[in-house]
Structure formats: structure tokens, C-alpha cells
Image 1: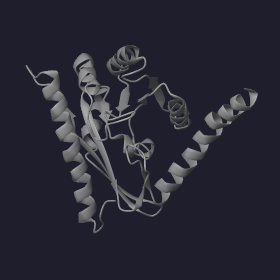
Image 2: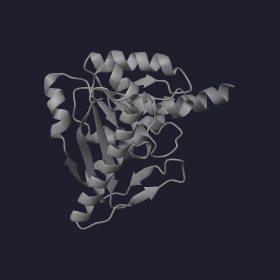
Image 3: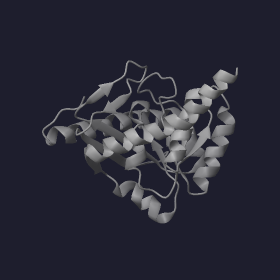
Image 4: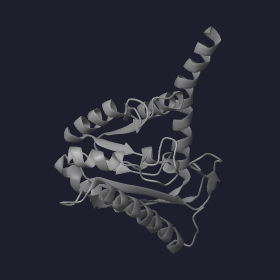
Length: 224
């Protein structure tokens, strides 16, 4: 028991700083371009909280590209979630703990409060366990309850490694080219039901990812 506690303590305290070192090193060596930052900046200037939607596989580099006033991410209540929460902390970001299967309603209520107070939220709508690239209903429900805009985020890079995980998590290689893309804001339309809104977000995620991939191609490289 004592050995397991020591192992977990090291895991939770050391790994986040190692992760930060890797992320900062990659960022410093990569050629990066950000598209569409005017969309979130409009709301940052007004003090309006934004709901950012990004695929689970693209989490790694988002800590460096974000330039807003303050961010919290929805993180699962698992041990892996505890590690990711500590990674967020070393970047001075926060976490809302919960998922659709554990503490989901409490997490939803907390996120609504955070949005209404002007805090930005980052959500992986296909996480924490998939299916990959499938938007779940929660993000649409959060936008309807909070009144906050959803802005989609995507990332594509020219060279890197994809892990054999359910999400095919992306680790960019040093000195690769990366493109980040913010979409226009999404709001539920008058009379639109939750499923129609979810499908519109799904289509938007796919289109926004394609924009990042096409920009890479314009720069003369292909996405992994």
C-alpha cells in the first residue's frame, strides 16, 4: 500500500512537469500558424466565456496555443484524469472533474456557472473514451443552458506519431509544421432541437479539421 501511494505521488507530481517540458520544447521547435483567432478574441474582449470544442487526440499542444483570459477543461474522474488535471495546473489552467458516466450532472452545473462567470471551457466531445470523432450531446446541452458560444478548435501537423489508443492521440515531432484553426462561433438556433444542434457541431468539427489540413497542404506539406 505504501509503495503504491509513493508511486502515485511521484506520478502526480513529476509527470506533469515532464509533460510541460516536452510540450514547451515541441512548441519552441515547431513552425506554427493559427487561423481564425479573431473569432474567440471577439468574446475575450467582451468578457464572455467560450466553450472550446476539440478532438481528444489533439489535446497535447492546446495548452500553448490558447491566449485567452483563463481556461478550465472538463477532465474525467479517473487516475489518468488526475494526471491531466495536474498538467493543466502547471500551465495555470483549471479543471472541472466529471464525465457522462461519473459525476456528470454536478460537472454540468459547475460548467454552466463557469461559463456565465466569463471563464473559458475546453471540452473534448468524443472523450474520455470515444467513439473517436463522434460529438456527444453534452456540449450542445452546455451551450443551451449557459448561453455561451461554442468555438471549434482543430490541429494538424506535418510529422508526428499517432499512438495505438482509441483516439489515435497525436504527438508532433520536433521541427514539424503545425496549423491550429478556430471556427466561427456556434449558437443553438431558434427552434432547433438538441440533436440537430449536435449534428451541426459534428459537421463543423469535420469542416474545421479540413481547413487545418488544407492550410498545411498550401504550405507544401501533408498532415499525418
